[in-house]
Amino acid sequence: MQFDDALAYLLSLGHETLTIKLGLRNTETLLAALGNPERSYRSVQIAGTNGKGSTAAFLDSVCRAAGIHTGLFTSPHLVSITERINVDGAPVTESQFARLTGEVKTAAEELVARGELPTLPTFFEHVTAIALLAFARERVELAILETGLGGRLDSTTAARASVVAITSIDMDHQEYLGHSLAEIAAEKAAIIQPGVTAIVAPQKKETFDVINRRCEAVGVQPRLVGRRSELPAVCSGELLRTTVDGRAVVSFTTGSAKYDEVTLALRGLHQIDNAAVAIAAAEALQEHGLGISRAAIIQGIETATHPGRLELWPGPPRFLFDGAHNPAAAKALRDYLDEFIDQPVVMIFGAMRDKALSEMMSTLFPSAAKVILTTLDNPRAASIDELVAALPDELSNSEIVRTSNVSEALQRASEITTAKDVVCVTGSLHLVGEAQRLLQKPDREGGCIPAG
Image (cartoon, rainbow, N blue to C red; front, top):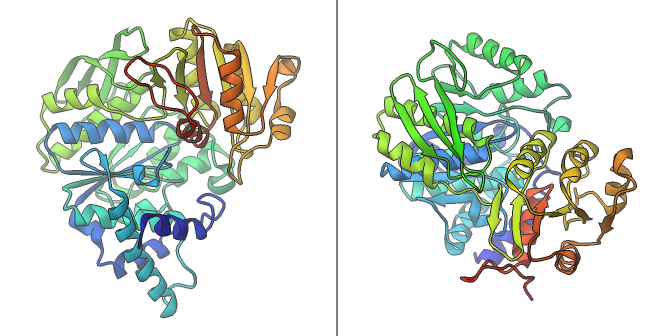
């Protein structure tokens, strides 16, 4: 199977989110048919609404700094689907991805033919199986798995990780996970199973109470991050200062060590909690027999990368990409813009129609000198009319440019942006990915211009 054929097959299974089918049976049956590759290495699973991808990136960087042979599974991707499956910090090749997809496709079709599955597994179930199989073939020592949606019934839960982490929980994907914080928290907290080590980021009281009840029910003592506690491996961070581009310099304290003057590689003050969760998870892995030194933890936190999250490309003009896709993420981006961006902001905004559009707009648009609305090549994307209809009353008279696609949005931005401005592309990681595909990456002299 060639890469284009593999991608076409996966896309034929239906859109990743629109065809989502929560439940573990398909994934567990498929993994069994593949020889249970997930049992050949340790796993860490990370769930949450915001910050789980950044936490996974921090932890992967720490483990690689320690010389651990790692696999990292994240979603969604920005430009190529191969970005979702990383081994030792590099995406699998297109040929590897195609070969593994062919194996998983054959196994899935045989299961359906034998009546062991009623239908083919979904896109995400396939890709999860491809990732877990890739990690087994590469003989990784540790797989770090970002939960796709929820936790209790997410495909990554089939890996039965021994260390789990829950990052900040907020309202998102209510159509799948529930219409209250408590319901959403219950879905995510269900990754805490008897015998696991559970790391928990700072939470709202309502959310924490749900997580704590889950821990009590399964006999697990949670390790809390960012708050005073007598529990083991607690990790808290003290902000010392910030760099000019918005990176926090922090001293972290855990039950067993202190990490002084650590400059977080990822921008934004919200990354302090994500880094603290990663440090607590790294110390938990030490207890599970993996050799991770204090120096490796510091190096990993200071060198992690996570494209599309407060990612700056040099100018002129500078581009800031952030996939802020819900109100909490929009608030984190707004805080960053207010504190660290002094130049006028031209904001390109597009989002999915099932998001809290008005709330996100109310948070983000006041920080922009000019706003360009656009729609995406995605069946879930909000149309321009839907975006305009969602404009809060206080923004209805604002000067807002409407465009019919991302290419047009970038062209309009190039026409109205000066060399001193910052172009902020936000509202969806899908928008960030589409924009980055259309832009040339910065060259040695800097500068981003539309490709073509």
